[in-house]
Image (cartoon, rainbow, N blue to C red; front, top):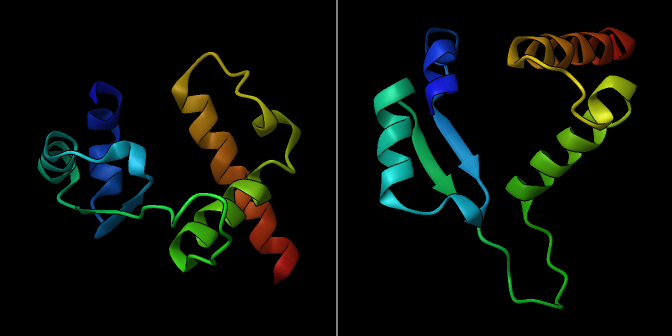
Length: 100
């Protein structure tokens, strides 16, 4: 959470954070609310071994798929968090420019 507090001013426009079931718990939700003022919504998977489309999880998985097309983001090789953040921003700028 210490790394997030450095970026808290940049994350002030986030209203809701959609997370995986691994982030359940009141401590996590309170910490996010305190740091950036966002609500936390936990999206849990359906029953195991049954396929069901879950719209919010689909958005997250699709976004990760887009990012994996960029070689430097395929595996986190950066030494500093700032470099990873900037490479992610550049990847999304490139993606948006290709679609425009």
